Every structure is written in C-alpha cells, then in structure tokens.
Image (cartoon, rainbow, N blue to C red; front, side):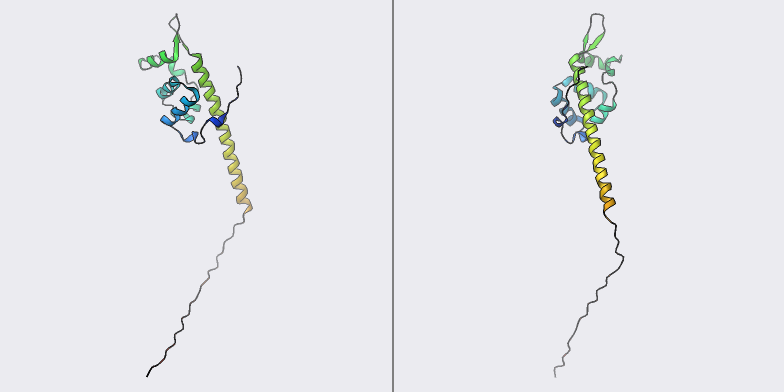
Length: 149
C-alpha cells in the first residue's frame, strides 16, 4: 500500500472537542463525502475518539438489517452475484481519515506529555516557602485635648 503524506495542519486545533455537526463538517471539508458522514451518523460516531476507537467503520454494511439497506446502496456497489463491494473512494477516504486522526492524536499526546514535563520541571525548581509569621500592626491615635475656658 502506498504511504501518503498526512498534513495534520488542515485540522482545527480544537478537533478533539468537536462533536456532532461540527465534527461532520470537518469530515466533509477533508473528504468531500456526504456518504462518509451518513456512514458515521448511522453508527453514532460523532467525534474523533469514537472514530479512532471503531475498528471497522464498514462493518455496519455487512449487517442484515432493513434499516441499513439505503446506506449500503449509497456506500457500496452491488455486484452481479448479489454481493456488495465498498466503493473504493469511500474506503480510501476512511483510511486517509484514520491516518490523519491517528497522527493528530499522536501529536496531541506528545504535546500533552511535553506540557506535563514542563510543569513538573517548574514545580521541582521553584522552592516552596511558607511564611507563618503574623505581622500585627498597631495604630495609635493621638488626641490632643484642650480645655477652653
């Protein structure tokens, strides 16, 4: 299989917080495919984590359920022997998304690890000081009394 270059800069920085329509908008922006969005929606895959944790996005197309007949027709090609083959472009787009999201996830994990190391380093360098002494300030008021007779 050909290894392609994956540029994660095409994804927004907040990709891990996007879900539902915002997530699907990114899918359409990256792949141009409404079919992929339909496939993901049918399975309740509405964010990058659910996408990455779903091992076979196309498994749903093998289910013998009336609910998915239209989806199967949109995402597959029916062969003469009454079997279905997933559209090659759709499959390629899912593979690309998996690579793109996996790489973005790895970059994010490295970034988090680096931030944690920086915080630990800062905490180990800064001395902890506690000042338990209480300072009390006394205010004296001087009054002058003059007796006017």
